[in-house]
Image (cartoon, rainbow, N blue to C red; front, side, top):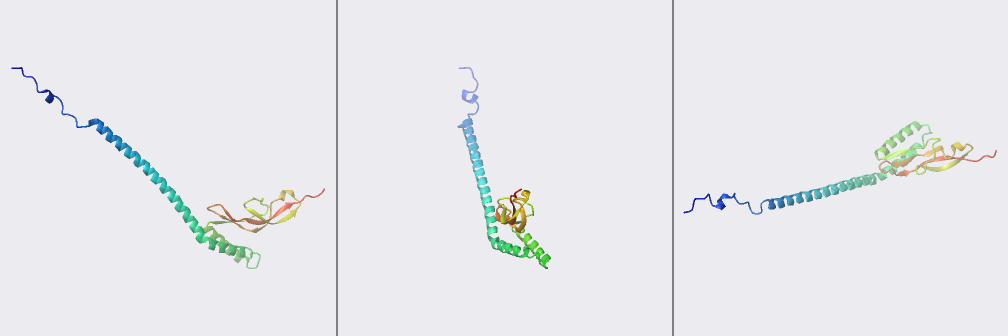
Length: 176
């Protein structure tokens, strides 16, 4: 009889590993990492689309507001011109206060009223010459002699709706 040996060899080993073991776990973890990476890429793309759509929405709202207010702004401009031109009459203070009210209404519509000041230098894109007045002083050349009409600038776009109109000095050469 053979001497007793320990348990059979197969019983001496630990339980066999599950099929696939670490290799399968590693594959699954790699698949999860790829899925998470793809999810984040798609989420970033969605955020970009949402941001773009929000910007377009804001732009459309601004454009729609301008379109709706366009007739009101045109009427306010005509009213302002009529009232501002009447300030030299006896009821000038009343008309000037109406003109101030119109300036406030235009401001609420996103329109800035710009006026010229005597001696202000001509600026292309801001001023328009209504007429010119000759002068002998070269320092006054291309400066405002008499303001005529206020200019109007869209606050959102910076676009001039109407240039500031004035009479400008033109220096003439005098013979010595």
